[in-house]
Amino acid sequence: EVQLVESGGGLVQAGGSLRLSCVSSGFNIADGAIGWLRQAPGKGREVVSFISGRDGVTYYADSVKGRFAISRDGATNTLYLRMNSLEPEDTALYSCAASIRSYYPSQTYEYNYWGQGTQVTVSS
Image (cartoon, rainbow, N blue to C red; front, side, top):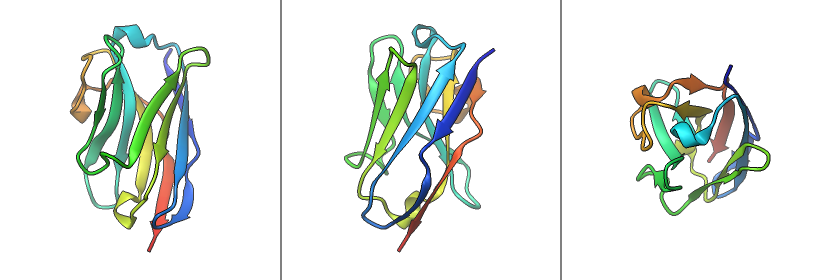
């Protein structure tokens, strides 16, 4: 059974930083990819970033490039998302998600497993 447990969300002022963490179990990244998705109020879910299990390639949505950084500690099966220069538009529920459908899952439907999510709220 795949389990993904996120932590690290909170309330931060615009321009601030947060680091999200996701501890995974039951998932072998070599089978696909793991990343972060978010859903803002009244909007659809979007892929923010992922790491490919095939070659370690990372992906970032255009809206977060240069501000967010994804990383992974294989020894502890922990995925991180460092978020800098946060903007009110980054306010959303951030979920850790894993895919065994694709090594480069840039679309939300390509993900098989989801965590409960952690809320990030950026005040202006």
